[in-house]
Image (tube, rainbow, N blue to C red):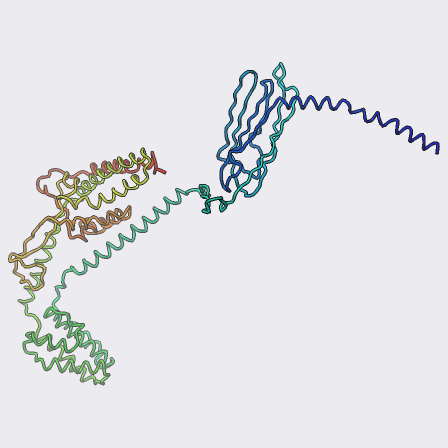
Length: 533
């Protein structure tokens, strides 16, 4: 027991010593507080009741002696308010009478609604020694600020939602991909227009193809001979043989008397044959043949080989009794030869040289390019996007309309070219292309100026950006006389108004130089300035 009392006495006597041990700590704490007291901090928000999505600003003002150095963090953590990465903020510093005033502006974005508090910000500092080094240090705390954030649909007097912040693009514009897709689309459109132009021209050329000079009776007799030698009169199905005999007779009558008989019914054929001079062939015999062939073809009436041979003989006699004489064939050959010669004369007489036509087009393109480049640079300087787009759109409009007003375009006027429409007429005013015109009718070439509608029509394809130009070039290379599809479509020809006056060979270099300058002018605004934003 005595032992326990001794231990308790020792413990009680030692307690005041432990309590007095940290007596020096208040002095150190008071020194730090004195240092921090020299740094004054003020913090305020531009708005304490913002709306969700608004941008606000935190302003921090520090006042301290010039013997201090204060370190305000460059990116203070103020969550749930977010710092704007695109705007780092700004700071100001003023010094007077030994005191320094620093002001920091931190832009923030409100991204959470409700009652919020900004976290406290610790700002370290230290004294500057006489040698410029760091002396005693400490820190001061910027207190948190309370803020009440309203949602987009919260308002005191206006129930309409507040405007959303300006959107920011999440995907960058892929210019190479856009240009590649545009070029691919132009190539596909150019190919389609070229194919269409060539197809239309071939269809028109097929209609104007010279008629066969072989007489119809020669074709008919040849087919009858081949049918007889093949042995099909006794072995083939009667319906097939009769159908072929009927086709031979119809084709012969149509070619001999200038009408299309293959699609006619038997009744229509007989009505047409009544007005013809069949010489020794009776109409009753043709009607009997038509009735018999219809019964065999459509009703399945049987026919013996002997009956098929009689039908074969009848068709042969019709051909031999009504065929053209040698004098009639000679007149037809002469008429066809004259028609083909006139077509050749037409082609050789009116077409201007290709080099001259390309030169005129190059001058027109150069003129349009000068105007386009001037408007484009004006749009870049003034920042007008609509004017920039209109400048290049007007270039294609110029290509389409350059010939529609006046006699011809400026390029054609400089080179002496004219746009003309030609008609082939006979001396009595009838068209020489009429099949019923007599062979001895002497046709002449009549030229006239093309109408404004034809001039507009010949250039419409050029108004299609890119693709129309390529299609016209390809058709000009593929079609006869290098007469492009626009001229084929409008029925116009570009003629040389100074034919017989020019001397020497036409050079290509003026056209090449003009096109090169035009290309530079067209692409210069795109390369140097670009489309205004």
